[in-house]
Image 1: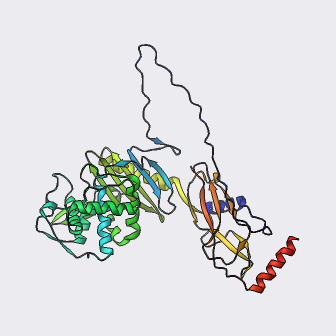
Image 2 (image 1 turned 60 degrees about the horizontal axis):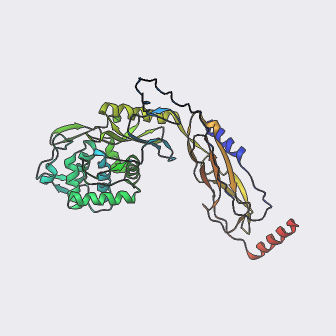
Image 3 (image 1 turned 180 degrees about the vertical axis):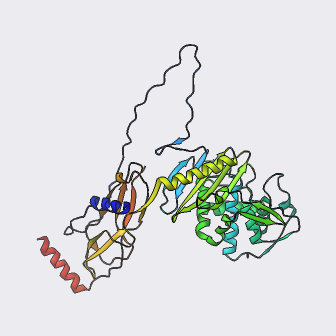
Length: 419
C-alpha cells in the first residue's frame, strides 16, 4: 500500500511539457533547502567560586536520534546505497583483524583469475608460525602442508594471523610485498583512506583504513565472489583437532547476519564489519572503537535492528512500468514510453508522506533513440535528504529514424501546425 501512495506522489508532482513546443534540451534546476534555525541560548556563567562545568559529549546522531557508542560507524542499505547513519566514517582508523577482509579478497581474486587453485598446497614457514602471543591463531606448525581453501577458512572463521601470513607469503613472496599489493588493489576499489602494512591487522605504524573503506572492500567481495563469501557465515572451524568458534556472535542471533569480520587490538578497541539480510533487504554495518566484545555485539545487533525496523525500501513505480510517454520526431513511432532508471528509495517508514518529486524532461525527442538514453530526471526531495535524489529518466526501447519522405511529411505538418 505504501508503494502505491508513493507512486501517486510522483505522478501528482510530475510536470508534463507541452508536446507541440520546439525541441529543447531539458532544463534542470538545482533545488536548495534552508535548514531551520534553532534558537541558541547562551550558557549561564558559573557564579564566582563555582567550578566551570563542561557540557557532556553526546553519542546521539541526528536527524534520527539514534545512539552510537562506536568512535566510527557506518550503516548502509545495499540495494539503494542510502547511508542510514555515519559517524566519522571517512576518518582513518586502525582496522585490527578487519584487515583480513582485504586479505581474503586478494586470495579470492587470485583463485578467480586462475593464478592459484583452492587445492593448491602451501608450506607453512617460520614467519607464519612466529605470531604475537595471545593473538588469534589457526594453530599451524612449521612445515605443515595446507590447502589455500583451508587457510582461507582459518583466516575468515577463526581470524588466524598465522593463516594471513602464510597466504601473504604464498601469493606475494613476502608479507610486505603482499601488503603493498593489498593497498594498490584497495585503491582501485575506491578505498582512499587505506594503507596496509601487513596481512593480519596486528598494530603497525601507518596501517590504516576507514569505516567507509571497510564497507567498500566488503561490498566488492560480496558482489564479485559470492561462493567464497559464504565462508563468513560458518560458525566454527577445526584444524589439527582444535575446534574454534567464529568470533562473529551475530551469526547465532537470528538477525539474518551472514558475515563478515570482527577485529580487536588494545589500541584499536573492538570493531566489526557485519552484513545481514531480512526479507530480501541487505544492510552493511561497520562499528569501531568499542570497549568490549559484549558492547560490540550489543551495538551491532541494536543498529542492524534499528536499520531494518526504521527504514524501508520503496519503489517509485513497479519495474519496467513507464510513468509517461513523450512525443518523437522523425522516428518510426510517434511517441515512446519513459521510466526511472533507479526504482528503489530507502525512506524512514514514518516520514514517507514528506516525499516530493518533480519530473523534468525534454519536450520532444528526436530519432534515432537507443534504449537507456536519458531524456530527463525525476528529482526527489525530503526533509531528511541533505541533497535532492536525482534519478535519470530513460527510454525503454530503441526508436529508429523514419525514411526520408516520412521525415519530410512530419516537418511540413509541424510547420503547418506551428502556423
